[in-house]
Structures are given as structure tokens and as C-alpha cells.
Image 1: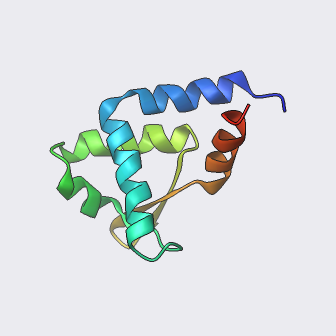
Image 2 (image 1 turned 180 degrees about the vertical axis):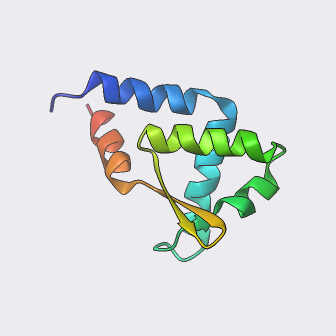
Length: 96
């Protein structure tokens, strides 16, 4: 399988930031703890982290731009979920 180096670079850059990695792992954990098919509220995760809302928003955009998460607005709330396609891509890429 040939891998898209640009895609891998975007993913690795997004996860190289400590706060983004923690945010990503929190979203992943929420999915496992809550109903697996449901999205989690970004505000719930942000409350657990010691980071301001504008910074959380920036990190969410970076993770979404890298294709790691999907974001939706539900009313006034923002929800996030793990992008399963990217998760599969990474699994395949690292099973060399």
C-alpha cells in the first residue's frame, strides 16, 4: 500500500502538539465510555482540560483539518467524533 506522505505529515503535525494529542485522546476516550456511536460535546472535554475556549477551538480546527476528527454543531453546542476512516488509514499505515 502506497501512503500519502502529505496526509501522514498533516496527521503527525496535528498530534505532535501536546494539547491537541490530549484533546484527541479525550474525544477517543469519550466515545469508548459513552455510547460508541455518539459524538461527544467539546464543552465537556474542554472542562476537563486547563485550556481556554479560544485555544480549544483552535486545536479542534487543527484536528479536523488533519482529518482526525469530525465536528458538528448541534444547537449552540459543538460535538466531535473520531474520524474512523483516518483511524483505519493509520492502522494500515503502521502495520508495515
